[in-house]
Length: 520
Image (cartoon, rainbow, N blue to C red; front, side, top):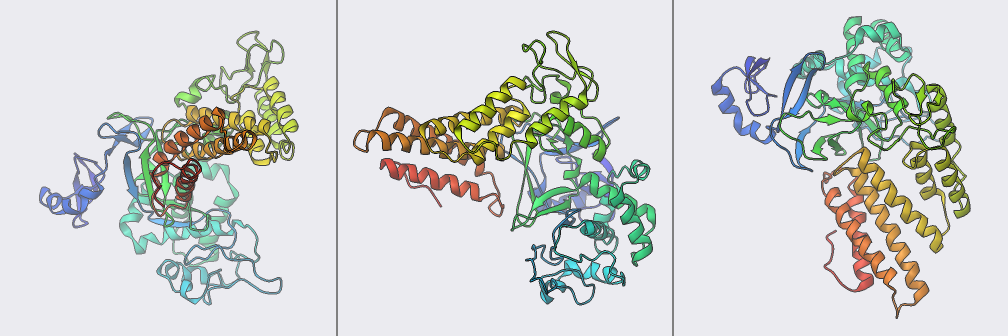
């Protein structure tokens, strides 16, 4: 394979590429052989292809099984999200709210929030500190313990500094899509503020075009991860940015507390098929997904799910036709034009379809605290939307979160909701996903609680068939959950779900006095 890049062995200009993954360049066959002992651990089963109209993207270089590790990658730049509560620029810890008459701890040189002197002296912060300190008027510094867009400049600055600190990574950033002209036309406030700040307020030594490219690159390519406190971070990854989008992805992303990303298949992928990741939550309705993809990434999604008027038979965004009640309104000509009923021809403006659903979801909070309320809300939704609709999903989650009754009837509703949610999630995000693993765990907890209610009713000396069947279902669900959750990196902030599932299974074994002891 040929291409253009830097040799993985010596860093010189290179035209050869690894034939296995196509991700690493070499200046000669000899250097490729010398580098193999290092590269073989990262010769991932993907390769980069180029297609007119789609650009460069990743495809599988061989058949991949469900749950298989596809790639592991560290960010070349990591920082806070565009809007953040005060965060230490040294270790990325969220800073506690200070007393009313006190300020946050700050770096003595640039006055940005840090945990203390040790964090102010970290390599991560030292490179940016002098630039931030040149903001002598403190224009960008967070002034109070509030969520603020001022942190948006940090990620841009860290990418700009790669020119001096990591030239190879900077070359990667330079080659990423930024949609610079479209963003210039849109004059998005954060984008314009970054350009002004780095050219007129601080000594960044960068021209405006470079700054605009970097800021656009971050918006287009950054991937969110979570720190040890659950705080949201965003990173630029030198290869993972090449994953194409689909609202029905075939891989999942899992991150460590250090923002190392692990990409695993959620379903089997055949050789040559694209590696597909959802840039947005697959649980968003059609209009949200299409609008956000257009506004942020400047493309219209044409994935299998979006091309299907019924969203793969789920009718996830379709309201029930209020004229014939037999059909559901579908976006036959696209989500932004009137939706129509295939049964009777009734039409509804796209804006009204979205507004009706969003208003319903916005009004759910506090309406599902009792079994009676929950039942009324769910029945009302079925009259207005499909049983798999985004509104129904939101209502089901609200019921599971708010309803406090622990009667047998309430437990039966919880069981039914979890079963249906798990089925719906699998249609939207098939395979071994964290959502499936966590949902199976939560569903198993409800199954065990329901079984315990049967035991309390029937007596411990005469456990009913319902008790035994409930525990059997719970163990079966936990086995499936554990199998998925074991794919989490040990340093993941989400690894707690695996420990919870193992503990729940052990408690069930303790109840029935059988089974092996689960590992911690």
